[in-house]
Image 1 (spheres, rainbow, N blue to C red):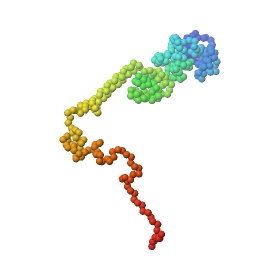
Image 2 (image 1 turned 30 degrees about the horizontal axis):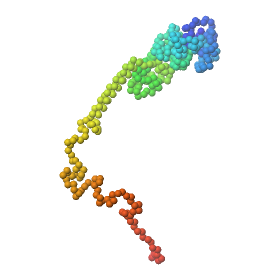
Image 3 (image 1 turned 90 degrees about the horizontal axis):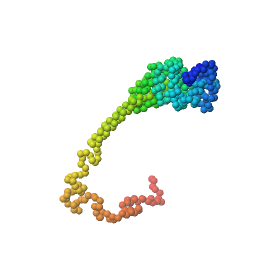
Length: 342
C-alpha cells in the first residue's frame, strides 16, 4: 500500500499489510491499495466533500478512508463517537486522538518529538472528515490538516506565539479581539501593555491559517485567571467602600434643606421678633389702630363707599361710560360758485 494520507496511515498501523501490488488508487486521498472498496459503498448521496477528492477519476476508496468515513468502528480508545468527531495524530509509534475539549493534549503532541512517518488532522467542528486529507510527513516540522486548511508548522522558536497568546488571554483579552485586532476598552484597561507587545510581534500573521490555528489551540490559564478575578473583585470592593465613605462625609457636611447638622428644626418658642406689627405698616403693639390711621390694603378692608355695587355684573357692550367721544367730522358743503383761482 502506498500511503498518501492520515487515514491510510491509521489503517496501516491497525491492520496486516497486503503484499499484493497496489494498483487501485483511492479517489478520496489518492493512496494506492491492492484491494480497495468500491467508492459507492463509502460515499453516499449526501457526501459534501466531493470537491476535495484527490483522485476523483477513480471509482475506488482505500481501506483507510473506508474505515474513518464509515460507522462500523469507533476510534481507538473511544467507546463512542466517530472518527470525524476527533482530532487524530499518528506516527511510527503512536495512534492517538483527542476531542475538542482536549486541546492541551493536541498542542503537546504538535510541539513534541514525532517519529516519521507521521500525520496529524485537527478537527474544529467535529462534523467533517479531516483525517482523509491530512498529509504524510517525513521530517520533524511538516504540515498538518486544520479542518479544511493545510498548515505548515514552525520551528521551535515559532511556537512562542502560542505562549504569548495564552498569556494575553489570561491577562483579560478574548479570542475574538485577538482574531480581529479590535480590542475593547476593557482589554486596553486590563492588559494594554500585553496587547501592544503581542500586536507588535505577531500582528502581521493575522488572517493566515497558522494564526487561526494558534488561537484555536490557545487557552487561558484558569488558575491565574481565578487569581486575577479575585484581585479585581477585592479592588472593586475597596473602591466602593471608599466612595461610600466619601459620600457619607459629604452628606454630613453639605446637606441642604431640613435636618441640617447643627441647625435646629423649626422656630424656638422663646424667639423674639417684630411680630404681626411688621405686616401692619410698622405699627407697634401699642399703636393707635383707629380709622384715622392709614390702613394697609388687605383683602376685605376696602370700604363700601369705594364700591357702589359689590355684586358682579356684566358691562354693556355699547356703553359710553368712560369712552372717548370721536371728533365730529366736517362736512363739505358743495358750492355753486366756482372757486377763485386767480
